[in-house]
Image (cartoon, rainbow, N blue to C red):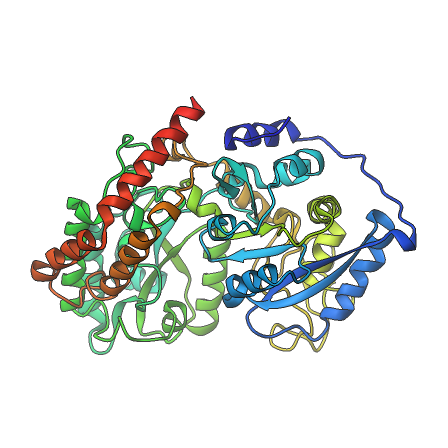
Length: 504
């Protein structure tokens, strides 16, 4: 039976818990299928990639009858690379979508095959590991992408320096959800105390807009350009223009105060250093970020190394589940794949086989890592090697079941329990009722592109308080209407109503 709905696939994931697959394949050398797989990098290919690739093939050729060939590609070029390879008919079996908002662009161009049947046949371990995140792989009612998640929710926070909270005797509550105005009161104390060239918020104009850390809306598998559902996707069925809301107007006024009072630097919209790099200078109080347990641990490690302090999250949202959160990285099988079954078998194995998962992610034991004494999950670099000179690192971890990854410091064995606890912490009211719905912008692609351009134009100035909302907010809203945001939202509403009726 072909699974067409996200709810059905999520149920399959629950049923798959505890199940094991008896799939074992023994292949003759003349019956081996070559799988070309995109290998995402940040622009530099690990020197030992071929050595790791050879180690993978020593396992999978005999086990499932495939030979893996990695095709290194910059994470910033996956869209162009995939489109060029598929449109030219170049061999590509497993492609990665990174920071592209899911699979919509490829599906609308006819570049992908549906994965429902393949996942049902080969993917029980995938369903178990990805769980609710599988909802992010749907488009037009069919599954086209396999999300690569270990976090079943996202939570947002202002991550700030504990030493400064202590210095100014500022009480904080890690169980509280802070408003922008409540943070303003904290910023006032810290800014007055530190003075000079110090600023409270590290940010740049190309990062996620500040308002996105306070709004609790569901962008319906798309962006603000096509409208949102309010209250974590549970505030009613009307899709609204977020920028027309009183909430957005209030935030614009607040962030204008932040800018005028110096809580933001005067060049916050033009500076190119990331907020994390700015934090490492010691001249900032905090930054806005996703704040799942692994993020807090990593950011604390970096701040301890550079500034000598811990990071404390002041949460600005509850842990939440929405479609767009599971569209950040996804595996796809393009139409250029001659053997989707074998390709899915390999992808499945990266979820089932712990040794293979860590071979791809961490490299070869004894050369690229060793177990810490007495541990079977915590690792360290061999003597003479560290993060700066290791000849192998899959710096973007998009491989398989991440809850089976070996962990480097600062992680410890509590990491797995903390992630499990976080994944189970999402409350029903914070799981969007539109989970699995993904807006198809193709019918209004001209207007959608125009609206997106307007948002980009204003986001780094109005959204950072650089300009006065008393005059610029109405200009922004008028420009959105002129670009066609009402038509886009109307089309989104039509599609959502049809999807909702089909679910019922």
